[in-house]
Image 1 (cartoon, helix red, strand yellow):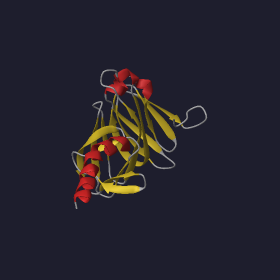
Image 2 (cartoon, helix red, strand yellow; image 1 turned 120 degrees about the vertical axis):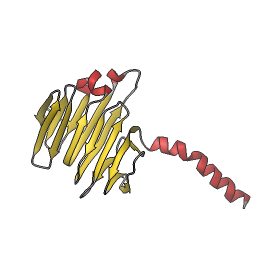
Image 3 (tube, one colour; image 1 turned 60 degrees about the vertical axis):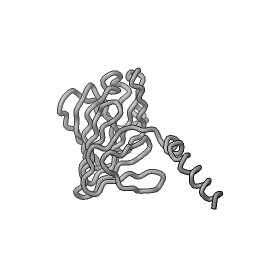
Length: 172
Protein backbone atom coordinates (compact mmCIF):
# COMPACT_ATOMS: atom_id res chain seq x y z
CA UNK A 1 0.00 0.00 0.00
CA UNK A 2 2.76 2.43 0.96
CA UNK A 3 4.70 1.61 -2.26
CA UNK A 4 1.63 2.27 -4.44
CA UNK A 5 1.03 5.59 -2.66
CA UNK A 6 4.69 6.60 -3.17
CA UNK A 7 4.48 5.74 -6.86
CA UNK A 8 1.30 7.77 -7.31
CA UNK A 9 2.76 10.80 -5.49
CA UNK A 10 5.95 10.52 -7.55
CA UNK A 11 3.92 10.44 -10.75
CA UNK A 12 2.01 13.61 -9.76
CA UNK A 13 5.28 15.35 -8.87
CA UNK A 14 6.56 14.67 -12.39
CA UNK A 15 3.45 16.00 -14.21
CA UNK A 16 4.67 19.60 -14.62
CA UNK A 17 8.01 18.33 -15.92
CA UNK A 18 6.41 16.00 -18.46
CA UNK A 19 4.04 18.78 -19.58
CA UNK A 20 7.01 21.11 -20.11
CA UNK A 21 8.77 18.49 -22.21
CA UNK A 22 5.64 17.82 -24.30
CA UNK A 23 5.78 21.15 -26.14
CA UNK A 24 6.64 24.81 -26.03
CA UNK A 25 3.77 27.04 -24.86
CA UNK A 26 2.64 29.31 -27.69
CA UNK A 27 -0.64 30.85 -26.54
CA UNK A 28 -3.79 30.67 -24.46
CA UNK A 29 -7.34 29.94 -25.61
CA UNK A 30 -9.53 33.05 -25.18
CA UNK A 31 -12.65 31.63 -26.82
CA UNK A 32 -13.69 28.07 -27.60
CA UNK A 33 -17.22 27.69 -28.96
CA UNK A 34 -18.71 24.56 -30.49
CA UNK A 35 -16.61 21.62 -31.63
CA UNK A 36 -12.97 22.73 -31.26
CA UNK A 37 -9.98 20.52 -30.53
CA UNK A 38 -6.24 20.05 -30.72
CA UNK A 39 -4.49 17.26 -32.55
CA UNK A 40 -1.06 16.25 -31.33
CA UNK A 41 0.82 12.97 -31.47
CA UNK A 42 -2.11 11.26 -33.17
CA UNK A 43 -4.63 12.22 -30.49
CA UNK A 44 -7.55 14.65 -30.72
CA UNK A 45 -8.57 16.40 -27.49
CA UNK A 46 -11.24 19.05 -26.87
CA UNK A 47 -10.10 22.63 -26.27
CA UNK A 48 -11.53 24.88 -23.56
CA UNK A 49 -11.15 28.54 -22.61
CA UNK A 50 -7.98 29.16 -20.59
CA UNK A 51 -6.16 26.12 -21.98
CA UNK A 52 -2.62 26.55 -23.28
CA UNK A 53 -1.70 25.59 -26.85
CA UNK A 54 1.78 24.47 -27.85
CA UNK A 55 4.13 24.30 -30.79
CA UNK A 56 3.42 21.22 -32.90
CA UNK A 57 -0.30 21.16 -32.19
CA UNK A 58 -2.98 21.43 -34.84
CA UNK A 59 -6.03 23.52 -33.87
CA UNK A 60 -9.21 22.10 -35.42
CA UNK A 61 -12.74 23.50 -35.65
CA UNK A 62 -15.76 21.70 -37.06
CA UNK A 63 -19.28 22.91 -38.02
CA UNK A 64 -20.15 25.79 -35.68
CA UNK A 65 -16.72 25.81 -34.00
CA UNK A 66 -14.91 29.09 -33.32
CA UNK A 67 -11.54 29.44 -31.61
CA UNK A 68 -9.55 32.54 -30.53
CA UNK A 69 -6.01 32.17 -29.21
CA UNK A 70 -3.90 34.98 -27.68
CA UNK A 71 -0.30 34.18 -28.53
CA UNK A 72 2.51 34.69 -25.99
CA UNK A 73 3.80 37.69 -27.99
CA UNK A 74 0.39 39.42 -27.85
CA UNK A 75 -0.71 38.31 -31.33
CA UNK A 76 -4.14 36.87 -31.99
CA UNK A 77 -5.25 33.91 -34.08
CA UNK A 78 -8.99 33.43 -34.72
CA UNK A 79 -10.08 30.23 -36.43
CA UNK A 80 -13.48 29.90 -38.11
CA UNK A 81 -15.61 26.75 -38.53
CA UNK A 82 -14.27 23.76 -40.49
CA UNK A 83 -10.65 24.88 -40.30
CA UNK A 84 -7.28 23.37 -39.38
CA UNK A 85 -4.31 25.50 -38.33
CA UNK A 86 -0.99 24.09 -37.15
CA UNK A 87 1.42 26.00 -34.91
CA UNK A 88 4.68 24.82 -36.48
CA UNK A 89 7.12 27.32 -34.98
CA UNK A 90 6.66 29.78 -32.13
CA UNK A 91 9.92 30.92 -30.58
CA UNK A 92 9.50 34.00 -28.38
CA UNK A 93 11.67 35.73 -25.79
CA UNK A 94 9.86 38.82 -24.40
CA UNK A 95 13.25 40.48 -23.74
CA UNK A 96 14.28 39.99 -27.41
CA UNK A 97 11.21 39.83 -29.69
CA UNK A 98 13.43 40.59 -32.70
CA UNK A 99 14.97 37.12 -32.35
CA UNK A 100 11.58 35.37 -32.36
CA UNK A 101 10.09 33.23 -35.11
CA UNK A 102 6.51 32.29 -36.00
CA UNK A 103 5.21 29.81 -38.56
CA UNK A 104 1.58 28.78 -38.84
CA UNK A 105 0.10 26.56 -41.54
CA UNK A 106 -3.59 26.84 -42.40
CA UNK A 107 -4.32 23.42 -43.91
CA UNK A 108 -7.92 24.33 -44.73
CA UNK A 109 -10.61 26.81 -43.78
CA UNK A 110 -10.48 30.41 -42.60
CA UNK A 111 -8.22 32.03 -39.99
CA UNK A 112 -7.50 35.61 -38.95
CA UNK A 113 -4.07 36.61 -37.70
CA UNK A 114 -3.19 39.83 -35.91
CA UNK A 115 0.56 40.28 -35.60
CA UNK A 116 2.16 40.34 -32.15
CA UNK A 117 5.58 41.48 -30.95
CA UNK A 118 7.50 39.01 -33.14
CA UNK A 119 5.85 40.15 -36.38
CA UNK A 120 6.30 43.80 -35.38
CA UNK A 121 9.98 43.46 -34.41
CA UNK A 122 11.10 40.97 -37.08
CA UNK A 123 8.68 40.85 -40.01
CA UNK A 124 10.87 38.42 -41.96
CA UNK A 125 10.52 35.85 -39.17
CA UNK A 126 6.72 35.64 -39.41
CA UNK A 127 5.30 33.11 -41.90
CA UNK A 128 1.70 32.06 -42.48
CA UNK A 129 1.57 29.14 -44.91
CA UNK A 130 -1.27 27.44 -46.78
CA UNK A 131 -1.04 24.28 -48.90
CA UNK A 132 -0.12 26.39 -51.96
CA UNK A 133 1.18 29.77 -50.75
CA UNK A 134 3.28 31.57 -48.14
CA UNK A 135 2.18 34.84 -46.57
CA UNK A 136 4.62 37.26 -44.99
CA UNK A 137 3.52 40.24 -42.92
CA UNK A 138 4.31 43.89 -42.58
CA UNK A 139 2.61 44.73 -39.23
CA UNK A 140 -0.70 43.22 -40.07
CA UNK A 141 -4.24 42.13 -39.34
CA UNK A 142 -5.39 39.77 -42.08
CA UNK A 143 -7.82 36.94 -42.84
CA UNK A 144 -6.94 33.92 -44.98
CA UNK A 145 -9.10 31.28 -46.66
CA UNK A 146 -7.40 28.13 -47.90
CA UNK A 147 -8.01 24.71 -49.36
CA UNK A 148 -5.74 22.51 -51.49
CA UNK A 149 -6.31 24.61 -54.64
CA UNK A 150 -6.98 28.18 -53.47
CA UNK A 151 -5.61 30.79 -51.09
CA UNK A 152 -7.47 34.07 -50.60
CA UNK A 153 -6.21 36.87 -48.35
CA UNK A 154 -8.07 39.93 -47.08
CA UNK A 155 -5.99 42.59 -45.31
CA UNK A 156 -7.70 44.55 -42.51
CA UNK A 157 -4.65 46.74 -41.78
CA UNK A 158 -0.97 46.75 -42.70
CA UNK A 159 0.28 44.78 -45.69
CA UNK A 160 1.10 41.21 -46.69
CA UNK A 161 3.27 39.57 -49.30
CA UNK A 162 1.85 36.39 -50.88
CA UNK A 163 4.00 33.99 -52.88
CA UNK A 164 3.19 30.62 -54.38
CA UNK A 165 5.11 27.80 -52.74
CA UNK A 166 7.92 26.69 -55.05
CA UNK A 167 11.66 26.06 -55.11
CA UNK A 168 12.09 29.85 -54.69
CA UNK A 169 9.60 30.09 -51.79
CA UNK A 170 9.65 26.99 -49.62
CA UNK A 171 7.25 26.31 -46.73
CA UNK A 172 10.06 26.34 -44.17
